[in-house]
Image (tube, rainbow over all chains, first blue to last red; front, side, top):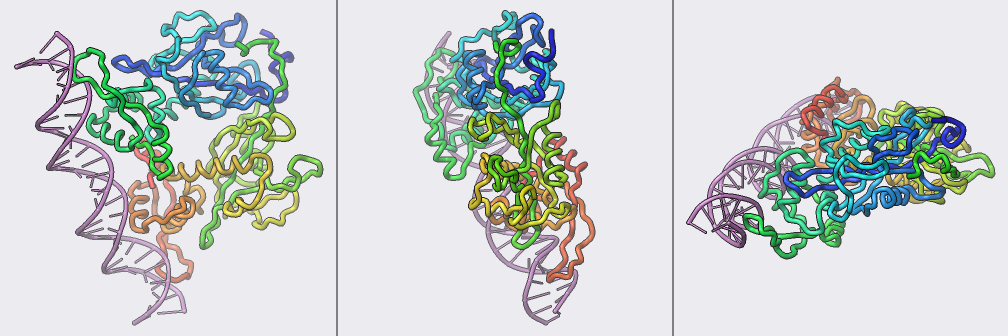
Length: 241
Length: 241
DNA sequence: CCAAAAGTGTTTTGTTTACACCCATGA
DNA sequence: TCATGGGTGTAAACAAAACACTTTTGG
């Protein structure tokens, strides 16, 4: 591959965005997944590696707009939530030159995307990779570091902010939400106390009972009430779990 | 996929770092200050405005290294603490073109710098500006937005991390530390309970009593014990105040 | 009527808050 | 010995954890 003069080796650093997209499979046990793209194009850096969706920032393009664009173009996903994570610019992180990446974290409702699971994807195509598998896989560039920053942020932020709900389907049971928290925080949560605490904030509104003929009593379904949450914030409260 | 395309020739955004440097004047009442530079150079953007210290990232220079360099060159200050804050890239934020700024927050012990207070500085020179004054002053670029992001981060982070101590002199009394927290958090803290809670973490070690002949009983002086703090973290604890 | 999963009430435990009191120093 | 600010003990209020129990469904 020719390094050099043509596109990348400028005296000024190049700017990209990369997006860590999380989704949750509502199976039992529930699984946290991250959206990855298989790098193609023979001769380019990290050919055949899994990488985070991302790309260059266009001229006069806002950073978050760029992140959302890449998400749409590369991952065909609309985020329920997106936030800037951190910017990675260590020299040597990209073999093509001095490339600075502004990383974002996005949460999507996995049931609203059409992305296949499985890791036998074609180059250029995308997959939902279980986060637990990723200790075994080398990602392109410093994407493992970006991913672990995102995981840390998700796990700490979901304890005070209702962003965990952005990983759930539109309506969900309290027990499913608890299972999400248990999986992501890596510890058991008391069923009774979790329900009491979550409902105490008055930011969930009840829908109709679920009907899937599984065993046991059907659970009540709830949905997030954004207006009520804004009200909670105004009173100085938070969504502590 | 645009990454790796050799035909993706485009005008690149420029990358800068800006640093929000906080310091505290141990006067009564205690004052939080931010380090600002007066912009000079007739004909340049925002001439005569106050601005955060900052500048261009050099080729193959790490972002935090660049921030520390600007701090040293422009502000003659060594930080007790520094962290990346966020990256600002809204189109139009810099009249000179598409400039993306990676913002850092730094904390310094104000008694270890030689920067003068007062706002009648020469262009190119620096001052410690009380944060409370800054509602009245227009800063250059979007530096008011960067500053308020930094303030928010400082205020929220100091409740779980001992970074407030990085604004204090090497040794300090518990009451002075409480006054710092009261000023920054904007509310009163119970004297008895603050002391109990702060000391309960076992990350402060006692020095000798202070001798300044002020009225009242001389306070015990304490210093932060970094090793003990690491131990606390290992046990899953935190420095909650 | 039994198993399975959802929903609820109450006691126990620990933490936070409030408040009162004592101590050491300089004038 | 008094004013001033620093250091401490303890009971009340509150919130978290633990646990046992009731309800609703399908087979």
